[in-house]
Length: 511
Image (cartoon, rainbow, N blue to C red; front, side, top):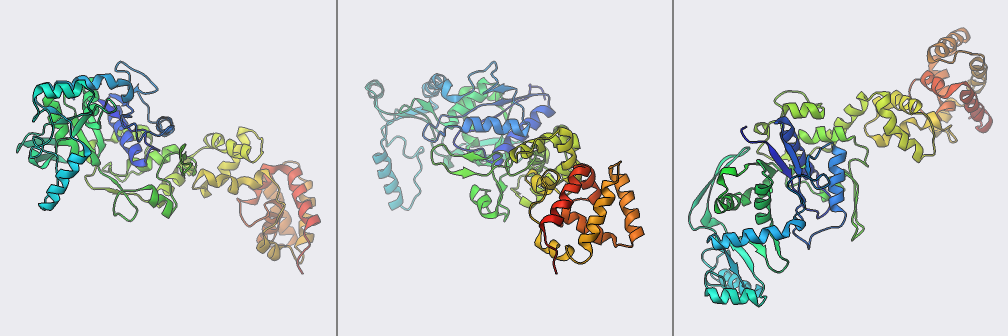
């Protein structure tokens, strides 16, 4: 590639960032890193009516959690600052006026009432109303009004918009890196609004093209919902005389519902019990909340791995990728044109694979906040060790407390089914004898304790399951957990004896 690769993620701060948006950011990031380029973050906040407080901060925190590094943009700075469109508003009027002066755009002064009348007229004639070459000179625009009147209206503060003057009956030939060659006739397109005097702000189309040009963006990788806008964007580059520096475009497939029909939405997640946002979100205006992958117990690396494979195929059977492996393997020519169906169970599967492969040292910092939330203060070594013993049974980080709590907290209640089965007959006396055996052991390592206890069981003629399940009732309080000698070593001799005493003292054996 002859130009420096410069891509941008340009979300609008209108609420929490959908995982489809995260995937767009991820593909931009992978592409930039693969080609030694730059990743920009631009906040497109020109729609002041849809702006939501806190959404920008949410976007930045989400990208950070995901490990998507920003080289230039909001929160980082760079040579093309500012990167927030609301702070660039004075730039856009100049470019809107330039298009009018060059004959590529015009001022429109029409009112909602005038547009409604034309819509009604079209409906009565059995047509669909479009603001295009057929109507623009029937309305009060700079194409139909004398120049002096246009200037007078602007001078006295009448509200106006600048609309693009879509050419009539021209074929726009475009190329997309994912979808190939596309051609559209301009007579099927309407005259989009580029700038509004009411709030002195551009629309997406103008701001997007101007900023991508000024920020030297080389590739625009975005969702397929923007594909219908591509002809207008091509024509805007031509109108400005920027064809030579026009970026290459790639439109990504939609993320589909698990059922396959339509775009994945928050409602699907609510109905089927999974998040569609990376982080937990609470609306500052309505108080409504939305679940997040982080808070639901997913590791960022697993979340990103899962998301990368929704719409992109590495061409091999490999499924587990580190971020660097994704960078090394990623290419736009392996991105699908078809929508990618989201699979909640597959997301859990990815997370389980990552949980199972973490070392005790990697598990410790995940485990520690969970322990602290339950009032447990312990070393990183013990936190990691407890999680490590149980990690093969973990799917989400939210499983960690339930699976490991008995390492840190003695049971105060005993599982009814196990108690009825084990706490009867000769078992209470057998456990009391086992207590004496354990008390006499000096080396309480897993290996030595197991050797001593097994020798005692053999000498006494007890069944191994009978002894282990009764000991499990005393130490864990339930029929769960790892091998019993993992537990005895972890909690230590004093705690073992104390838990056995608690069961003997507090629970009456079944008849």
